[in-house]
Amino acid sequence: MTFPRHITKPRWYEFVAKKLNNQRMKIGIVHTNDYYNESTIYEDAETVDIHFKRVAKNIQWSDLFPLWIEESLPRDSQPCPEIPMPRFDEYDDLDLIVARDPCGSGVENRTFEDVIRLQINLVVADLLVRNGLKNLESDPPVYVVFIGSCSPMRELFRCEDLLWHEENFWIYKPDLRRLKQKLLLPMGSCQLAPPIAKPGSTDQNNIINQPKEAYVTVIHSSEDYVCGAIALAQSIIQSNSTKDLVLLADNSVSAKSLRGLKAAGWKIKHIERIRSPHAQRTAYNEWNYSKLRIWQLTEYDKIIFIDADLTITRNIDGFFVYPQLSAVWNSRHIFNSGVMLIEPSTCTFETLMEHRFKVNSYNGGDQGFLNEMFIWWHRWPIKLNFLKDFIVIPDLVHEIPEDIYALHYLGLKPWMCYQDYDCNWDFEEYRRYASDSAHESWWKVYKAMPKELRSYCALSRQMESRLRYARRVARNDSFPDEHWKIKVQDPRSHFLS
Image 1 (cartoon, rainbow, N blue to C red):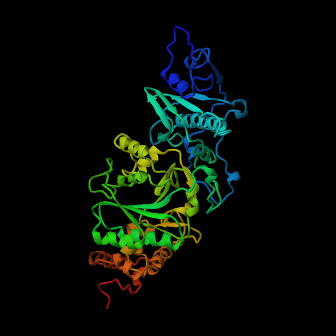
Image 2: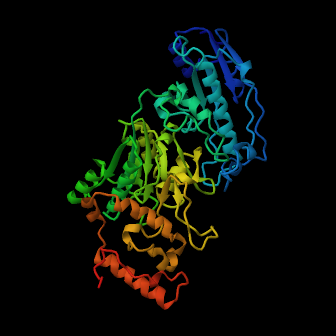
Image 3: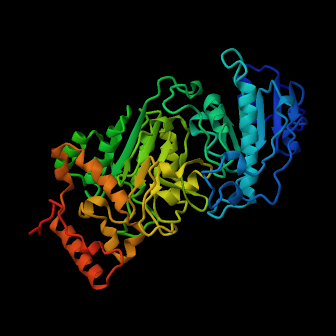
């Protein structure tokens, strides 16, 4: 390659030129200054400025990830804001794309800078896919060089695809089929992710042949959720799933409990727990970063993680076709990490570990941290992770919908209550989580379990003493739902007459 004498040949250029056997390159220039345009790449390369309209300044991150969308309406009736793209048919046969990537705001309350960053990353991704997928088997690959102090958006450009990094330069050779799948999805959670393939289809746009997939949950720090994990496994099996079931457990889980979890259907993997650096000591979420170890399960292509306080009410195997990170909305611009699809990766796990002390978590736990690490996520319907929380639903009975896929038991867990009714009714601070129909749904799974598994859901004397005390308080305060009047017949009770 020949350069003017006053300009030093960029090291990134040498790297890509070698990869392309020093052929004459056609380079697309995205959002850079003059130093990286045609005056720098002099004789042996052709450069093309990629023109596109800058996204409107009145569009904010909250427009792309809104507080709420009406999921029952057709997608076309509530479109996402427009993020202008180039006229892609004018830019073909590119060998390399060079783009300046802004860092974004890097804070919880995201700004217009994050919208600009997303636009640039999407422009680059689309250029790569359109130029690289024409003759994938015969043509040389298309590379991208990002210029900036921050890496490009990890949601689009995977760490596995990073070939070279030095100072402010990042060279990627993306997996174009995976990248194309992400471009089929909306600009944000302003719309539900559309069906990528028919439920149960094995097509997946030829991304992975015969993918290895699993449902995964985690138990750490105590055995409080052993019963919940057993019920979760049984509910997945009862839904006729064909996927593996994997449970990560630390040394707080006894040998007896591990036997029960294995009998329920889980493959057990032992882990060292990870402390949440932003949680208070002894807080409920102190060790919730242990969930990050799911990215270490690299024997699987995709994982749907499910918290142990959920049950599956109908088969969800078809949702494995979606890419990382797919989840259900929680509030504001964030997703709920209780059910989410991820793609295991050693370098992603290492990235998460590297950032866990630097990146804040709004709630001190894994959900707050993951929402900072994966700001661009794909919105699954609420019925895939229906939160048992009726604070904003004008329903005194608290009935759950019939068409949900998975039920998330917030508040006191069913196995910590009597079978007869949801004990959340008897606790003033938990009444928002009370639902007899949800409670009945969990016990339906329990009653379908083999009898030897039910013993792991025994009601301890300590738990029952708390329930009896709450019933007395509810009776003395004359709670209007009058659940405290129900005669307890749960055979697990220690005090039945």
